[in-house]
Image 1 (cartoon, rainbow, N blue to C red):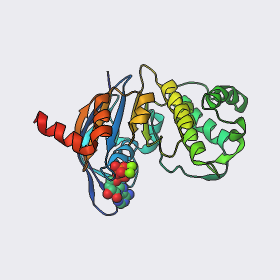
Image 2: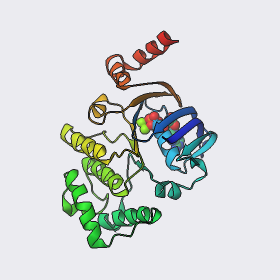
Image 3: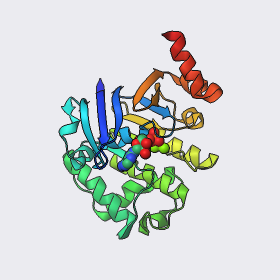
Image 4: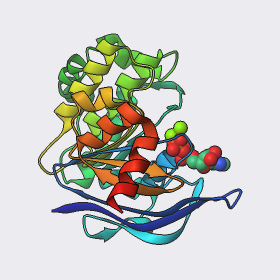
Length: 256
Ligand code: ADP
Ligand code: MG
Ligand code: MG
């Protein structure tokens, strides 16, 4: 069953009018994990942000259908309530708001949408503790302000904690592997795998094959200059690692 269908998506930076996405096509089905790789500036983060409705970008063409509905007609908050979440490369700090309050409010907004009862603080504690443990995070973490003085690794773990609390239907993960040592990478990857459900999907942006050894994608897409220029299986990441983007270009020429 198709969960997310992106067709000929075009987008520009709202402020400057610069066109970034030049016709992106991508179909993600329930239960699938997709990876997007590509050179810096090819539009990977822009695509991710357009899916969650980031205000920096204006959609100028194409369509996005999510669970059969027109995603582009939905406000960013509606998209979140409907289950699309993105981890941000630089998450914001929210002084004065504790992580536990932030996560509980977010979880309850989502539960409300699904007609489930809200969690009281104590119930939330019971709900979130196993998730913290899975990410090898210290429980003290819940009492700290959102993202304040978090180390790089803690920020990444926190992003995944947010996704697991929100029970995302489509998790968009933009470079969650950046700046992680191998142990932290494995913890984060295990947590991402733990989030997967038969009816959810994961879209990961990464530069590195090593993440894909842990979170194994059904499809790997190569993005260049605002388009997906090549798609295949995990072997695409192998070619990229071995021969760089030239290797992909050679492959495209050979198949043409
Ligand atoms: P990637 O994630 O693939 O490295 P991005 O999607 O971040 O690429 O950026 C693609 C191009 O669009 C880059 O040239 C970048 O400078 C530009 N761009 C993206 N977002 C903005 C923005 N908010 N304002 C100005 N330029 C932007
Ligand atoms: Mg980049
Ligand atoms: Mg990026």
